[in-house]
Length: 118
Image (tube, rainbow, N blue to C red; front, top):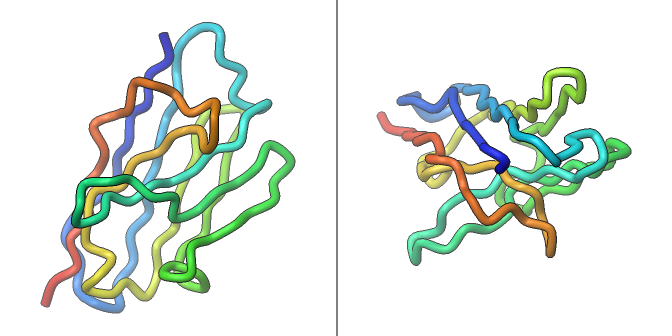
């Protein structure tokens, strides 16, 4: 079974920064061969991809985070990070990591709460 553990969330003022981290562990999963994504929970409790990084390092961002968030990965440590800069109030939500697309892992992690507030 593969486990996803997110961390790094917290309370920050608008314009501030946070760095999220996700560690992937478990047998049968070759981290470096898979794309990874950071998801954000919507008000309707859906999870939508905010940032994606393919196995070869290409990235894609949702319009709401483009220019503010940067996704990165360390294949040697099975980790994916999300650098969040110039945070806005509407970036407040729970963030999760997972594999994007049809190979998405069924067991989500607990997520990490990001709260942007004055």
